[in-house]
Amino acid sequence: MELLSVIRRWRYRDHFSIREISRRTGLSRNTVRKYLRWDTVEPKFNIPDRPSKLDPYADKLSQMLRQEAGKSRKQKRTTKQLHADLTALGYDGSYNRVAAFARDWKAARQQEQKTCGRGVFVPLAFLPGEAFQFDWSEDWAVIGGERTKLQVAHFKLSYSRAFILRAYPQQTHEMLFDAHNHAFRVLGGVPRRGIYDNMRTAVDKIGRGKERQVNVRFSAMVSHFLFEAEFCNPASGWEKGQIEKNVQDARHRLWQPQPGAIADVWAEEVGCLMQLSRPFDGFVEYAKRVSPTCLVHLDRNRYSVPASFANRPVSVRVYPERIVVVAEGQIVCEHRRVFARSHERKSTTTVYDWRHYLAVVQRKPGALRNGAPFAELPPAFRALQQRMLKTPGGDREMVEILALVLQHDEQAVLAAVELALEAGAPTKTHILNLLHRLVDGKPTDAPTIKAPQALTLTTEPQSNVERYDALRRLREARHAS
Image (tube, rainbow, N blue to C red; front, side):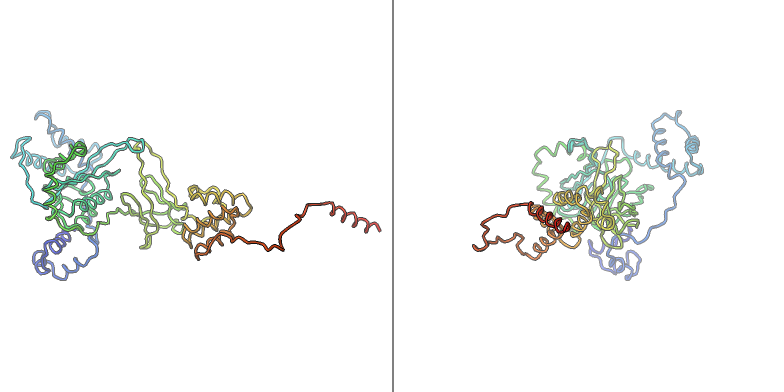
């Protein structure tokens, strides 16, 4: 993945020839051309990971070592004692693995403190368009009357110090990708290098020194935008001090007039940024199986899927503001993504699209009466349903009217239903007649008919049932004779 990213940068950013790239990488020119012809920036295979038995306990061991580092020499526990503590927690690996981890941890810590005293740093300087710094922060806001935790993405150009902040509900991959798309668009281009801490959405595993096992989707984004990602040492915030300072005072700076110097220097830096390509399609994909009730589950919420895909596998592509369901290489449906504003609330939200269940109620029209997906029909359909369900066979006729949206524009069907309700004759035949008139562009109002003078009614008929009694008496007299 890293080699693919380097090849793309040399070719599209630095304009190296195929021959030069082949010479530098040792790959054949045909192989280089094949990599550049790929329409995707993601790898086609995964390198198998060979985990160590110590990996599940690495964070715990690092925490133990940090605690021991703060103790006096006589109070510190030995590595054998730390190994015994890990064994009590379930670790069944060797002592040598624990000792090697401890040596590496101590060497890295000593390297950080070897040349500098605490609190002493080297000032950093950057060229226009050279780098940007990124970080997350947590804040709270009152939204809709509820105190809501926000995850704020901070993006800052290292030369001009122009920055952008964007708030999200979570620190996930799709939010990270969306923040980069917006930042590069607003700031006018892409710097050549990005400086990050070791956030989980970017780094899967921290190695020795600067070695990092970078997340595949994060690498795909880096390769798409053609910049180089650089990661700070653990717990070394000073290596990206600009964005750390930005996190601290962003709230104050947002409400104060900005000095003109930043705008002036930013205008200078924009000309040195790389040209922004198309936005990165920053989704996270999950394999799901549709339930018998035509629902897929995601983040404690449920979303409806067309009934034809019930009990079948689908892919759910998650974006910051929406989810897209894909099956057989085609987009099946989309929904607005739902988040729980309150972190204390554990209830599940179900997002229905009543159109997804039309195929079911066409076979089972009785389900229309209490079907949960049909509780949020448009007002005109709701009014029609209340009238239809009062008549025998009205549920089936209502289903046939709703199914018209599968062949006609939904707004046209709604307009026909509203006209039928206004006319006081909301039947299927009337609605179909009005719909065809709307589709054909014909007038829907009945013309006024003026009767000729000769047909004018002069004497209105009166109801008189006595003649029926006379006919009955005449019939009885005939039978008697």
